[in-house]
Amino acid sequence: MKKGLLALLMVLFMFVSEIFALGGEKEITFWTTEVEKDRVGIQKEIAAEFTQKTGINVRVIPVEENLLVERVTAAYAARSLPDVVFHPIDFTIGWAEAGILDHVSSTDVVMTLGRETFGTGPLNLARFKDGYAAVPADGWGQLLLYRKDLFEKKTLPVPDRWEAILKASQALHSPPLIWGFEVATDPGQTYTQQVFEHFALSNGVKLTDSSGQVNLNTPEMVETLEFYKKLSAYTPPGNLYWLHTRMDYLSGRAAMIVWSPFILDELSGLRRDQPVVPDIAKGEPGFLARHTGFVTTIHGPRGRAQYGQINYFGITRDANKEAAKQWVEFLLSEGYLKWLSMAAEGKLPVRPGTKEDPEKFTKGWMELEFGVTTRAKISRFYGADVVKTIMAGVESFDRWGFSEGKGALVSKIYGTKVIPEILKKFLDGEITAQEAAQRMNARVRELQ
Image 1 (cartoon, one colour):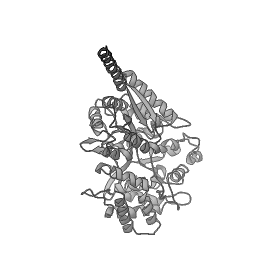
Image 2 (cartoon, rainbow, N blue to C red):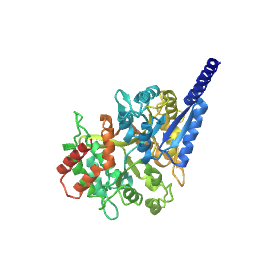
Image 3 (cartoon, rainbow, N blue to C red):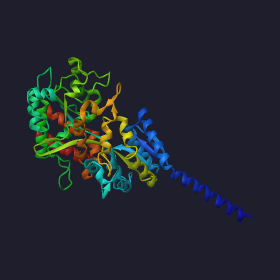
Image 4 (cartoon, rainbow, N blue to C red):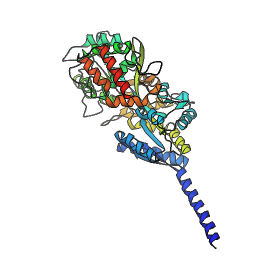
């Protein structure tokens, strides 16, 4: 009797375990830093479409980006990581090194979708061991915005090279009416690191040398510092960051600035809380947008580059690997345009198309609407040629350190803001360019 009851209980236990196992296979968890209510709604719509197609449920869990590291660290310790986590490049390599991300699964997704269908830059930033730490999702490339109408009046060349940028800055500088070039100078802002790093990359400044050692004390760095200081002579005094440069460009008081594509909706006059003064002065809505040029890749004496910020889909160590891979593949195929539509001006497709249609998502993105108070198609304000120029930069996004396996160190550099701090001392004349390069090198080495 007891043996019979025990056998029955064992069969029942196996049956229940199988149900739970099947249930586990039928649901995955997705952590996302896109936490705004409307964006969460869109992500749930994509998840519903995925469930209808595959039968796999997706729990969409919003996580504030400033809490993401803390949440992931705790979940890793408890072996309860989500199946997939959407995150910025700042954490990708560090998490892969720590064993949080499963690079084998991510590499499988890249190869299934086609490595050639992704931008080279976004893939290289996530390169890890013999594959990729995570799968590129979306991103934005930093832009140099300039007043085409003012350039045309003085027959100035496109400011895509250092010498052209300096020439135009001097020619158009007429404070307090207009400043020639507004660079970032605030030592407490990540924006300063982003702008300076863009120019440094354009002159071939790397975080490490050929031996893999941190080396910022180079002739290329000294040259970049001196160039940046020359640009700062055409910049308003004080500690400038993104709010100042955006405000001055929209008010017509800056001839050139460096900004992300997130400025496109304000520039187009689609936000009532951001008046565009040149449009008002001319009585022509969209005047400033039509007369703004965009430079993606800056050429320095010793290189060329476009700074890029890329976000990724990471499949974790604790994931249901097969279901997670299906979800990421869906996000980057059938659900991709809806994903990008959450904030089209700042979510450029890092996967331009498919094997069958190499421009599918680029073309689709151009038809997406952006804006807050009013919405309109990106191509309506900027035209196909400008939008293609913005998109072209995705192929060559660059950043310090990630492709050399120094992702964790880059996170510390950004967190401590050591580069902007030393840069500001140099701009204020407290130290020379050579001393600044030496200090940057020493301080970054200390962070390792």
